[in-house]
Length: 77
Image (cartoon, rainbow, N blue to C red; front, side, top):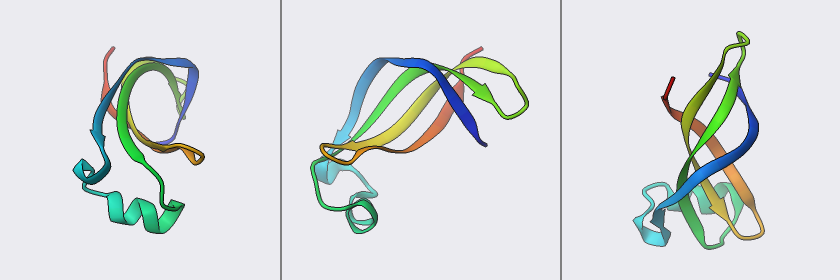
């Protein structure tokens, strides 16, 4: 499902850091070695069909690399 984030992500929480991340080895192989964190937050998104809604997003983030693999976990509206 493709989507676009409208505005900013709020209520950001850390889910996992470092070795607690199941995908850590793959992330380091694909994007590079750094201090990886898995985070979640709430944002307003626009889906491909034009629907605008609130959703909980999950993503991985590392210093110097940025946000990667943002995905919709739940649609809240």
